Amino acid sequence: MSTPAAAVETLGLGKRYGHAWALQDCSFRLPPGRIAGLVGPNGAGKSTLLRMLAGISTPSAGEMSVLGWPAGTQSTETLACIGYLDQDRPLYRGFRVSEMLRFGRELNPRWDDTRARRHLDDLAISPRSRIGRLSGGQQAQVALTMCLAKRPELLLLDEPVAALDPLARDDLMHILLQSVVDDGATVLLSSHAVADLATVCDYVIILSASRVQLAGDLDHVLASHRMLLGPAAAAPPVPADGAVVSSVTTGRQTTMIVRAGQLIAGQPASAQPPAGLPIADPAWEVVEPTLDEIVLAYLRHRPQDLPQRPGRWARGAAPVEAR
Amino acid sequence: MIRFRLDPRSGVPAYRQLVDQVRQAVRLGLLQPGDQLPPVREVVTQITINPNTVHRAYRDLESEGLVQGQQGRGTFVLAAPVPAAAPEQVAELHRELVAWVGKARAAGLDDEGIAALVALSVRPPGTSAGATRMAETGREEIAR
Image (cartoon, rainbow over all chains, first blue to last red; front, side):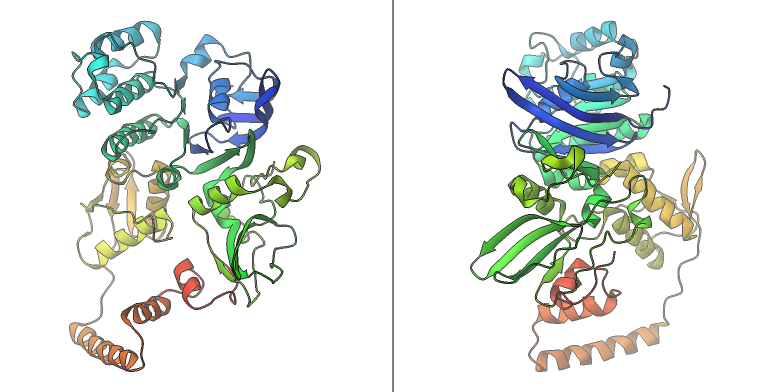
């Protein structure tokens, strides 16, 4: 398959360690050329998902396809097209930067040495420096440089900007975004800094308690949620096919995030009606929530807040993008 | 060449902010016919933004006829600036506005209240979360 319809597609994907499920019932479809943000608290299953997609660990349940290849059939060629950056940024601390590059060159058929050296030059990192002597931010930059020099079609980045100062974070995002422009790569990056993602990502996957709470186009996600503020005693004007994602009552006021019914897949948000969310009830103030507010609502929500749906989504997952 | 800014708190979608900034720059004469818009590759490092968002903004500007993309060369400003009002008209409008602000203060509105009313009048109804928050509380239909 040369141009897969989806860069990444999973269906009921799960990973079990002993008796505990690290990830369960994970289904989403990421179109090529997108930058997707994978958000969720620690232990939600973000790293587990990325490792399975990178071909490092094997799923215990479900199906997945990466760049058009089903799980387990990823050839060396496919793996060469995937750039995976582990949370721990595996680098040899005793190596010099130039030795690290040589290592990458020997192991990767698609290695672009010119690009790697240009990135390091832009970042003012000398090829003669020892990895162990670099700051945490610089090590992250070298690790990402190694990853991008493969010219991957799919980048899987596990917390690439965690623990970086704002300047290092900015520099790192810039070399990442430039590579996306140059190669048209698809990116899936995990983070708990939601504010960073809002302008960079155009697709969002919210994971919590080992499950996908929401996966979809950022535009669709924003268009299909509203924040309602109203009196604690009143019944909320939730759309018939919608659901309350979270509800917090403080004193006399209730604040809730509600979601419309499923959107039509494969259509741009602009071509769709406003997601069945005309809420006309004078008792309630209606505002458009930010991505942060939506993410927090899903991380806070109890599964019983969402209506039981038949079939795959019965356990409380809320797909915005219906398939 | 124009340098973009992003206000993540404004609630206005990022592509819309870029479109508005180009329009504004053309209106003020900071961008003139033949001027080039910054290449997408440059914009993503200026403001840390998704390249698809920049492409979308440029496509929107192109369909408005304000700019034209040239294969392999870049995106260039096409249209002459939108004719602004004559200077004497602007001065007259300004005088009226100053008088109106005086009236609003006399009626007890503070600066924030005045700004909210102006913002509400300038924006088409129902397009801004801010305006919705201020005045149309709960009554209006949400449309994007």
